[in-house]
Length: 310
Ligand SMILES: [Zn+2]
Image (cartoon, rainbow, N blue to C red):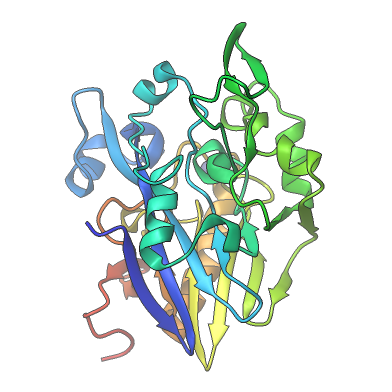
């Protein structure tokens, strides 16, 4: 697969960026859905893990390039990368995200805004990076052992955006949430004074709207891009893959699955009625498409498939 899939929303150029892939437990990814059903949609490996993309979205906006989510970054240990099957090494920079950005024609220094749907490690991990093989850089301690340099901002001229209450939620974890929120992905942003914290639905710049989509985590947001009568939505973990379009196919990771259900019902109803483009952050094969009705629920329609009533 190419690292960039480009499409337009009105006059806005958008680029889905392949920032690598990871593998997560198939049972956890599909919650209460029995394995004989989900394994027909995405086949598991010998460790029962399914392949998932780490996909981001770049929007070329008059205000400057807007990047939505940042993949997993380069700061995790070899053990972590093995457990989660992470493959995101970069050729030109810290990770494959920088390679994809370059393929779209941009350098990290040019990114004006970085929006995080939420602060889980596979969405905000690339907010920061550790420069490798720089013995003169200051060291940090990681699990008692010293590993390289302190994290730096991957997008040094960007303002980073997240829901204020998601940042609070990520900073005050409990036994159930702690494994997903790794401080080195977001604390350096605060340390550098680079957050713009949103409170609820917000138009960040003309045509790019932050829309709270709770359920996966309480203050998750999706991003709606609207221009010239067309709309696209970066779903984040509301609907991580096209296999999660049916309403009850909800991740076991979700903290409030019944809230996810109602958020999905409302958003997918609008997306189907108005023909929105949908960007799937974790789908291993389909970066973008539309949603169609299938009985009482929803199904995926590839871009060359006619959408809407017929
Ligand atoms: Zn998540």
